[in-house]
Length: 76
Image 1 (cartoon, one colour):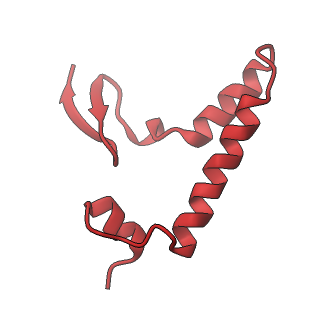
Image 2 (cartoon, rainbow, N blue to C red):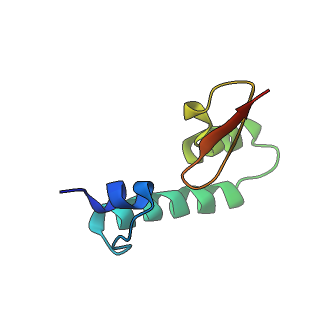
Image 3 (spheres, rainbow, N blue to C red):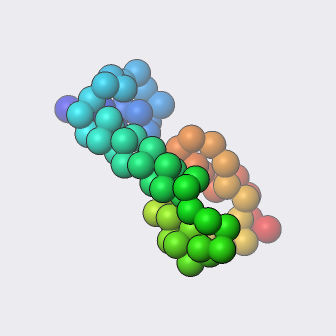
């Protein structure tokens, strides 16, 4: 049986209140909060937080990607 996250990623109906999804959502919200309250001069910290929030680590270079979940649309 698929987990709620697997259902979500497949575009199926899922329970948004699932414990795993709530935990991940809270983690992302906490990172967003931390980012929003860093000083502009804290460039390294801000970059670190953005890397943790971003899906860019899974996207190859020289492509256009979009959607939720994010997928490669075309190569450049």
